[in-house]
Length: 381
Picture 1: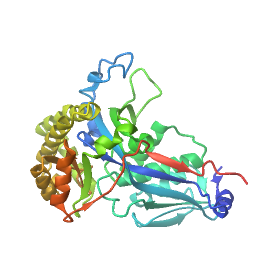
Picture 2: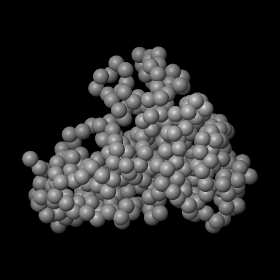
Picture 3: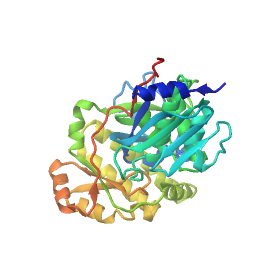
Picture 4: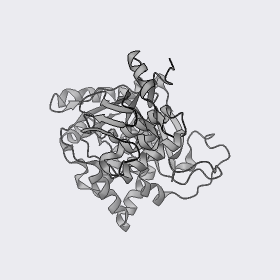
């Protein structure tokens, strides 16, 4: 039986307390493509797992496992549930040019229906999800926009359905729907960021954590690298700019995957494991110069794998290096967003002066959580 929400949402609308979720984007670092399914599986081997997974703060035993570090920031998407006539579901998003109302149970599994399909699989009815970006222009900035959106829809639908799924299941659901319906080539880092947030190291376990049979795809061992009290130290050393040039990230990810199937490409991709660990330790130990070394090494490998990776970002990269900073095209490098890392806040200030208004800076704050819920559960009066 369908979960009919029409009347509840009408009452909530009159009270001006419609249920909603705000979901946040992430800045990724070296290791960003290691969350893709093929990369998790290609480079994962059964490690010598200690009894206490996180007793050793270095987690040296994970050095050769695929990992990604995410830094949650306060750009992202707000998703609000609105009343719709009984027996219908809908989605509206200006950023994704969607405004569709359909009957549940009739939705084809095609790219255009990716968000509707999520609402339908939660067996909801009488509801329309309306999405809009918190900051204009960040949808395609390499910050994980599409993954953030679908994970947010999963979270809100899960809440409205009474939480039938747990966090790891939502990560797997969002990732698989997005990729299998052809929206993007994705992994699990953006989805995990929306669920967990913070400045977090994720070590990926594509088949679940050995010895824990209830775990599966989307599972990770997570370590907080920097606590909220110290976010200011990190923020003084990073900035995000936009080149003004975008292209679909999945076009770049197709190149990564194709190169993985060659001996030379496999060897290059495998080097990312150690570089991602370097980046992780640079953050954890506040070794800012090590952080820069990891960013530079990772960018060079990705450029060798795909020369178009830095397309549009060359000027920013050059100016960053001139000021003793390093620049990293975010995500797959398709969205136009570039993160600038500096070991010295003064160098970042000099970069800002040099770049001026040539490229637009995306303001942000670092967030300890990946999402926030409002007006849930729905009040029954």
